[in-house]
Image (tube, rainbow, N blue to C red; front, side, top):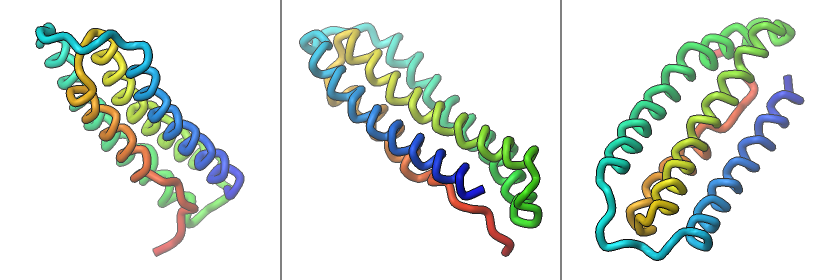
Amino acid sequence: MSNAVKILRVLQWSMLASIVLCAVVGELLGPPPRATVDPSLSYLLTTLSVAAVGSIFVVRRTLVLRAAESLASRPDDMLSLNHWRTGFILTYAFCEALALFGVILRIRGYSLTQCIPYYIGGFVLLLFFRPTVPRNK
């Protein structure tokens, strides 16, 4: 169990670093911000971001929290451990997707101020969902 937590923490920190790297790459490789950009892409990615955040909370409730309850009473249950680990990985993937939406916007000519909410949202959510060993209450 503690090995799974360590692996998830390494994954979390590497994904946090990759979000920072996404912001830097977007600034270095992106074109200069344009005065006029197509707002439909922003609307689409905003909608997808809301769906991704909603999916994060659904995954947390259906996989992570249920598996954590089971692991608190039976730490050697491999099925629950796999569900718990998969839930965290999916959560982190959705958080990373938010940052990638920011990169997409930046590459399409949006300014950093228009992209920064995606980077910050992904970073904060990823930082917030830290894996801990499930314990009995």
